[in-house]
Amino acid sequence: MSVACPTVLFVEEMVLAVVDDVPEAAGPALSPSRAADFMTCPLLYRFRVIDRLPEPPTVATARGTLVHAALERLFDLPAGERTPEAGRALLGPEWDRLAAEEPGLAALFPDEATLADWLQSAVAIMDAYFTLEDPRRLEPAERESYVETTLDSGLRLRGYIDRLDVAPGGEIRIVDYKTGRAPREAYEASALFQMKFYALVIWRLRGQVPRLLQLMYLAEGEILRYAPDESDLLATERKISALWQAIERARASGDWRPRPSRLCDWCSHKALCPEFGGTPPPLPPGP
Image (cartoon, rainbow, N blue to C red; front, side, top):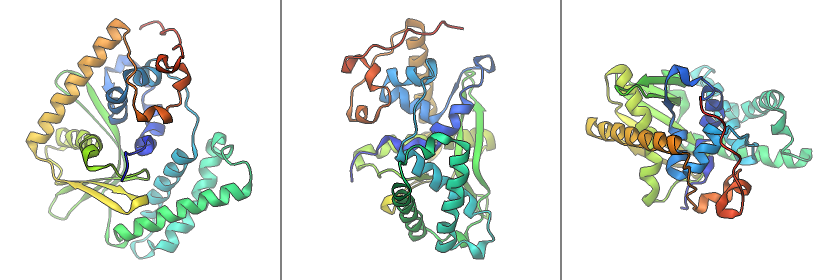
């Protein structure tokens, strides 16, 4: 396996682009994707949160958005009808809906043949999903669920959970779909940070530590599972608090340093990065 590509958080990137427009008057807030941005590269965080630079969709992010949308619709069907054929049949209508809502998506494909090939790649991912679990045996408690809690420091933690399963005994499982590559073992902790972030939010909201965190890497037919405990989530809270302090220091000083890595190859803002000869735009005036 190779390093996970940055499409890993694509759905949250698109959905939280709206959520992140909430005025700061509502209080400081952090999502898993924005936290990951700062850990990856403080300058990337600045471009997305401070400058709010637009980022065009790509075929990879569009495919992820489509598969997520179709999987959400799949669970609208009666349990017995959630078959591979039904999953494939949902992709076309969901694509038509997404393309109508966001014209920039359709512009990714110069002709019908290119679009058809791309849709077939989404079909392959949908088929792979059915090798990992049988949706006819599942009744998710929540899907694409927005969650938010406030820490004692006043920092709001928020995000969208793909799926929340609750067993008859009350045990909670948090499920996240990924259409990017599964991470190598050395990078699993980074991938699990997002899930521990969500688990911390659920714990604070419900007073119950989720029994299982499940990352489903659909394209590769792999599942990464982790059972957290209270010590895990307390450590995650400390990490998030320290991260927010670092963000606040960068905001106060205006020092948003780039952190070059292999992920730079996928960055939409590479032309503005000093590491590649670019010049960031002037910082917008503070509040």
